[in-house]
Image (tube, rainbow, N blue to C red; front, side, top):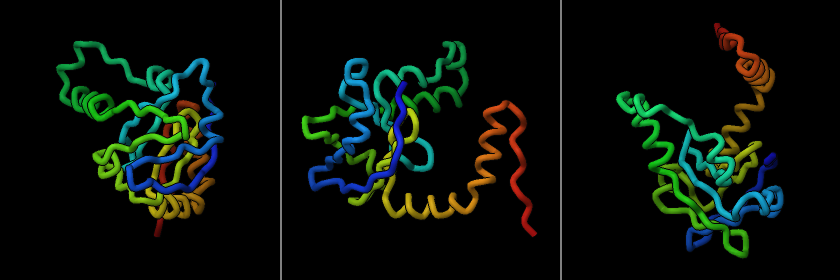
Length: 161
């Protein structure tokens, strides 16, 4: 099972290449996984990188009859239509397509985050701002996330006066 952790700070070079940290590359079982990623600009304007095996496992499966729903069609377009395969070169770099960098607001300085079964690429300033906000609400986030995991109703957000 893939288990990716940690935060790393790198720069996207002049040729739009990003070095994937060695600790993250080493966590990928190269015998089971090919040495590439599916890159998808997803939630929070973040670039998600999945190994092919993980991407296939987490890809939502919709019955063909659900294609009649505009929401299903649009979701599939976002999830699959914007996805691209990125090859990892011998130096551990991937080429970040300009369109993905623009969609995700990536500048030269990025944060590369191991998030359990995938890697996230954030603009570094946005990552640091986001994390400082989330650190202040760790207990609330934990309670809400655990409530969702247990299948119970999501706890209501704290009320402010």
